[in-house]
Image 1 (cartoon, rainbow, N blue to C red):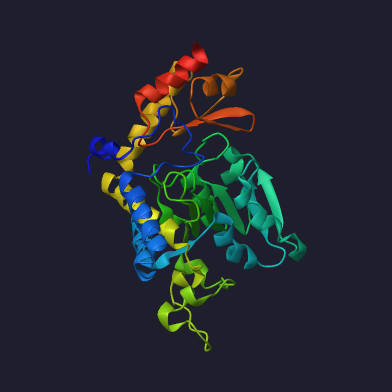
Image 2 (tube, rainbow, N blue to C red; image 1 turned 30 degrees about the horizontal axis):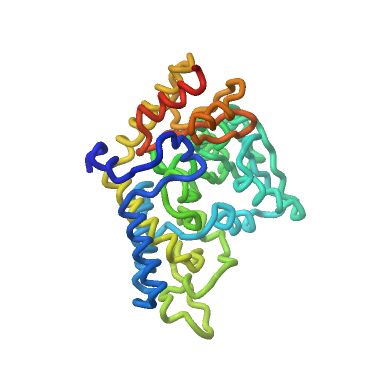
Length: 345
């Protein structure tokens, strides 16, 4: 689908520059969710139709990442999807993490300390060079939540491969606008309520076949069965052979909203979305006298910035003491100029 045509599917209030906090649903996602809620209220249907959206979402997410749908588990949060990976670390393992990493990709490793698991932190730019023979796993956000910096993915993966370390990527702030070779990682987890524009409560995890054999599905449940509808009652254990064994029973309406949003992203294509988002981010940077960047997230230190933006009706965020503005499909040049006028006027 042409990007300009697709952009007609949103009608946000002017000044929304906060997709890094949560994304805005396109009209097909909003309508699907409202219809499902209406059916729920009236008791007009059974849940299987809502659950079909979970399969659609899984397939659409896999296509965005360029991986097999059979290698994708569905969940609710990033940390929940990482829990079995952390639990599978050998006693005494060393995990390497950036020093300002979002804690959903930090605490799961740190809580393993009683088993002797050690978490070592280094600056993001030093991550690849810090991988050594003692490193068992490298975990990092592809795009940093605090300031939008993009990790040097290829370099980090190459360093990990050279030392036989596993790679875990939190792509929550990247998936939906930044193309990358997800299949090179062992695990890629994504909270879908930001750049994928799904309701909060839907999350996805790419679990490569090479790492799944090491993991135990500690949250095993009926939905993780080879045939969920034949897994309601009693033994024996009969889990799915692929990544679905790590599924948790989905919050139906989250995936009802997720499926149309993810499918729309696939129709538009990530390269076009990337170009649009970064162009607007660089328009913002240029207006502040900053050099061009490569991210859809811009972090700036401007005196009284949060107050100035709020007075102008611009919704952004404050992270690590700096204003964080983020730009997505529905952002316009007028939104950018409104923010610049507030900050520079």
